[in-house]
Length: 338
Image (cartoon, rainbow, N blue to C red; front, top):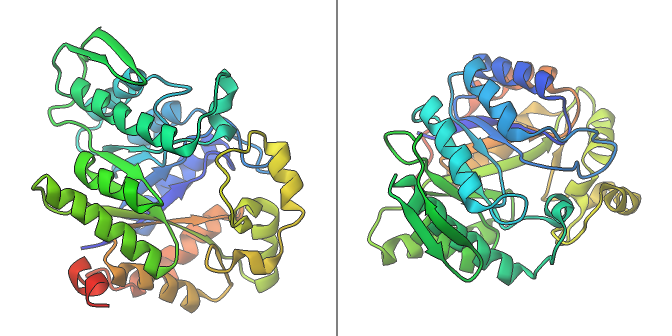
């Protein structure tokens, strides 16, 4: 049975406000829980926030009863993988069965702050999967050493950890990393994209699972939307609050919110097509979410890009979620047969 979740945008909102909205979302029926963005900087200065997600998640675990995880954190620049493992194991121990660790290859916007070289994406991907190896070793509770291409670990052991290791989900947008995700992780995260691209990612991920003899892993989707009571409000929310959603090019190498703000001046309404659904029509939003459920996603986490979060949660909980068919077709039927 698929579930709908709420994406907590740390780069847009004060953490205390987000705690209120997450609690509201649980009551409104967002049963998958919460994707928590993990940023040092906002995308643009206008977004205005970027609290420390790990502090926020400790409070989130106490204020709510649903699962939650990072979407996503980068192991390797601001944090050594051992630090990520330490933080994740602690949350896993405090909230058994609820915390999952979402990892990605990183963006200069957040990672350049500690200085040093910013490598190409192939190197960053290699670092991420080596980091997963380190983190997975530490999750066993054994004394761990590691001397790899990118990371060194000297006689480390996690003393505080959950009974079952925290699941690792990987954010990926390409088939090579999707296949490695199937082999080395326990789930995959992606964002809304063309059906054919998603199909390629799923097939590669499932191929990686098959190579190591394990069943398919859960697939999570973060879906950006802009809903408001009028079309003009919905459009202005997207243009003002989430212009990065209209930038259809790789953004991992851009370092500063001010640079994103300069590029945001070039974003036009048509640039959001197939990237952010902008509409006041709740039936359109229902059909949009249903499309991805029908593809077979296990969880769809909704991110409304405007500042009208409380209104969004209340209206979608009442007018959208009850009309979704959550018993989605199996991936084998919905993707391969198509």
